[in-house]
Amino acid sequence: MRKLKLDYTYINEVCGDELEFKQNLLSTFVSELEKDRQQINSAFKDNNDDELKKVLHKLKYKINLFKANELLKTVERLEKNITIEKHDKDIFLDLFGEFTDQISKQLK
Image (cartoon, rainbow, N blue to C red; front, side, top):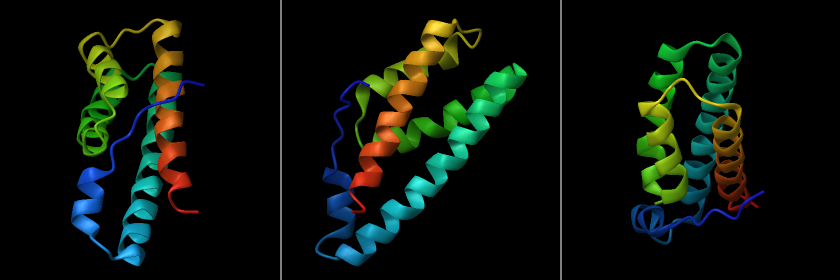
């Protein structure tokens, strides 16, 4: 798995010294990412390009909060060329998994 660089500056600015608020925010965020992952996997499985585009577009905002540029570039590439090869799908799923995992680790 790749090591994706995340920037927590925005989250830290929003939460300040409120650790409990930060934990709740990140927990909600991770829950939403899990829902997105399920929708993405379903869209991949069903070859539902419209649903995949919708979820990918929605993800861009979330990814941008953490300045995960490598993942953002992959999402934008997939969004533009929705008929994807297995290689691109695997790269995306790998990066998305790393993104979710890193945020989840902040909850421990």
